[in-house]
Image 1 (tube, each protein chain N blue to C red):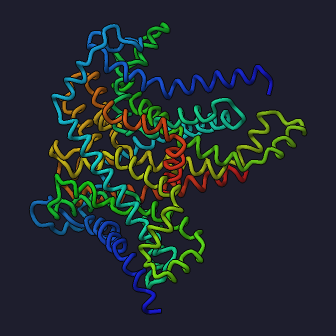
Image 2: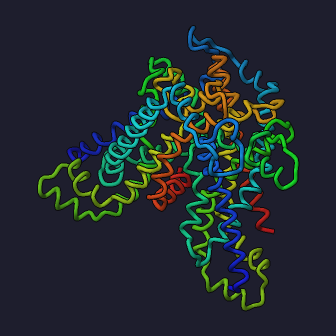
Length: 271
Length: 287
């Protein structure tokens, strides 16, 4: 490539990168500005203040929401990994009646748009008396068809001889799965873990339907309700609340970006 | 063989039960709800074709559908163009390649709720970053979200920004399968950069383009949190979305039958639009 073209490419990429990164920097800096200074272009505030954070923290239970988000996303991720592996193992390596139907149903589930089942699921949760519970946020996500398909695909490639010799040693299927298959399956397990956790961490429509009690709300829901309900008052306070949701994700992303990209792009295409 | 089946049945049973409760039942019940009237407090009653008749003439529903098409008309070309441009720029040996890719992908990992609140601030007429820059450059402030003819376009630009990194990754994967030797051969034949792009790269990336268009379309019909947070569906209902209307019917009006009817209609519309798009892109390519 000609040197001039090379420079042009880097300038263009630099401008593009700024477009994606700068808004988040502006957001972080805006939360540290007083309302008088809010909106100034400078990234370093003249008189940095934690006022927005104090207001946000005292007006709505964001600490509790952070905990709720960790509990909900953590439980769902653990369930999708453990129960998803058990299912995928059965679908990949065991024979049982109905296996083909279950495989077909798993692919069928991916074709059903979420909007179709949203309202019936909501009425189900209401009738089960689960409004304002963790169970309402967790149970519909205990299994994930995309995760099962990915794990099944990977489990299919593990040599049969490993299973045979383990069975010869008297190992049960569950032990074979968790002591032989799992250590060999770290990459797909990591991919499943990331897109499951992120999906749950960022989800907002479902919580908005099934939770009304502020103390059960996850972060994105409390943030939305807080910013909309006038609780925030100013944009600076809203953005400070948004930072609680963003900072853990950005830190994790900086260290694991390759896995994030592989996981979230892969799941989106297959899901 | 009988004894062999036991572990498989035991290990697959929880998932089968889950599918019955959380997939099969909701799909069937959605279809049943179309013919029901239900406020979740009193018992559901048979509504006949009332929900369907109402939907056929419901100006608010069709406004939301029309809004989605406005959104897609801006979003789809913009999404394909930006994703393709960035992917082509990245598809060469570059310093900091991982950094560029990671920076484009950053908004993808951030919650839609946060992005909506952030862009609400970026778009703010008086204190927003975008208008501050405009004024600095000698322009005048633009009412991005409060001008009825502009609000949906503003949201479309924001959604493009949020998702482009995702589609860049899809295009980059596709570009890996175009062998360097083919590109060099066509270059030796004297093809210009534009000719090479038009007659080699673009056709070979057709599967990726179809995927990008399909996923962005489905995503567009799911528009919810953006208008919910940024405009409440306004101004003049110009950003009102189908999912927002469905949510309002279920959550605010307690009309489960009608909300489910909207859901079923939306699923059918998505299926039809995606099928038509695939046909159109296929024929355009054949010519």
